[in-house]
Length: 179
Image (cartoon, rainbow, N blue to C red):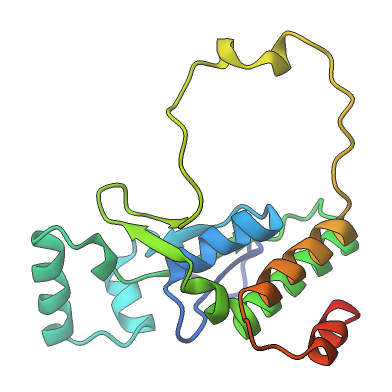
């Protein structure tokens, strides 16, 4: 889209076969702490072309949306690889996408789509009510909480993905954890 000779932002749009873009966005956030967006980027005709949606499919989608089925909205995952990111962070993001593409279908069964909010949530997660920032002690006290390293976070995410598949052999688990 646009003039290919002009400078571009490193924003990547993609889909993973068999997984709704919204559940991929949720997994990137929940497992890896990676912020991404899902949807069609307000680019209706372009989205139709990219997703190979014909006029009949488009009418069917519009009917579903008119009936309140937000899950019918076509789209893709969008994530940004900002130029200030260091190589280990970029590698972490790419590995996260790779892991979800290979093993995300195991965990997808544990996500539920909330049509009223238009979001995917892990079934065991109970969202908290929104509160004012005044209620957060973080702003009133100093805290010395060490953030999890990328390596620790990746290992934790791999364990969660693997636990979602009950009949994975211990040898395969070891191979994935060590990759």
